[in-house]
Length: 357
Image 1 (cartoon, rainbow, N blue to C red):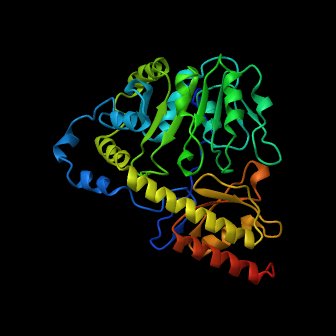
Image 2: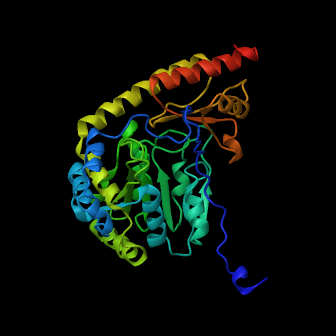
Image 3: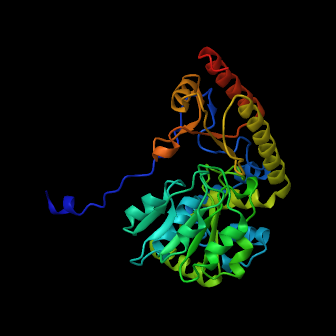
């Protein structure tokens, strides 16, 4: 084996949700928003001066940074923006997790965390969720190099009670605690205001879900000014121009339309509740979700086989092959009411054919 082959940084990559190319499909596998972005997004993109594209974008992401800070009632110095929350989270791992103690996160959570840890050679330990797929707070009352908690959690769709989350942060003042709030707008309560109380807390959010901008890649982090400064120092040493001009103007337009955001958010929450009732009528079992998806299983139906059958009907949901405990589950993104009705009809037909109804 040649020298360079001995020193390649090898890692098992993250597996993203399938992006089918067919035109007429129902895509409920990647937690995208079923509604278009705010009307102002289309307008600013249509009116964008093409001459701007020959120039580098603003390294700081202005005016997006200012718009987000105003929306969140924060100072600009407490906000960081990046290319989706994946880029932001990866930058956080790179910046803050450089010790020899293991960082901690749940065994069932966003599956990019262990990929970043492996790639960056960060020691880590996963802590098993309990039988209800919830965090056991005592698992995080130990020496560690940092903590990462998705709240609400993916793929389970559940959220920690805020007193529990606060106790975890309080017991770990010596290390960085990252709270990943990718799905916070669909029912959870954000802890962004806590960054003024806890100088070791970093909260991340994204425009991919509730703002309908998955294709633009807009993410952000909130923390005290000192942590944001450290984060920017690493960013500007790694890639000064992370966000492109179109993402900056589209993101600014999206965050500026609060009324449209609230309208689409209410639609998704309402459709989630209706879909949950219908699935429970069919015998599916799942915890109450505060996200834009449901994480379901069934005592009789093989969910992996159901996933395959739905895919053959051009209905895409998400099935995970690991960890083993969640193999019996499907994650179903919330689409439009029409899409969810088509899904329910297909599931009912599948169950009837097998005598499960």
